[in-house]
Image (cartoon, rainbow, N blue to C red; front, side, top):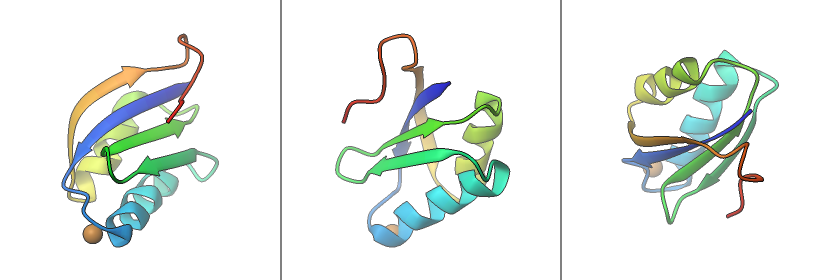
Length: 77
Ligand SMILES: [Cu+2]
């Protein structure tokens, strides 16, 4: 399942790493793509969406939108 999160609060590469690591801590197999400029985090994971969202929240960032992009053919940037 591929989920796109809109995330507020990411401002540099450190934030990108923090968000990526937070998600990977919940699911080591997750594929994570972060587009810093647009604040989009695309996660391909078998874990529940809520768990991914919670991981981002716990890392100190704010998820403002969640969309399932699996059905629409994926996570184009
Ligand atoms: Cu940063």
